[in-house]
Length: 81
Image 1 (cartoon, rainbow, N blue to C red):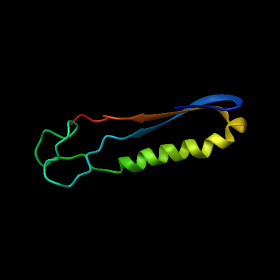
Image 2: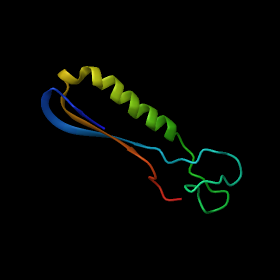
Image 3: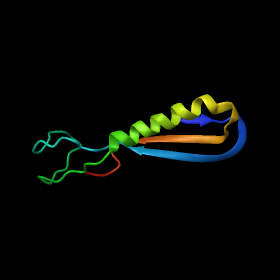
Image 4: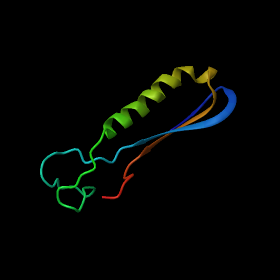
């Protein structure tokens, strides 16, 4: 997403990765799951995405006074399984 401010300025980016397999069940069946039994990448990816949406919601009403541009990247498949 791109949020263009109403004043001249630079560009800043915010990246939210969203690739976690969060199930604690043995060997979840998904195409993004690790191929190594018992190995998972588990962390707060849902929080990363929520914070990214929160940043956009907080800045959008300030758009006219915002100097520059904010680029928000929501990145799936950040880490290989």
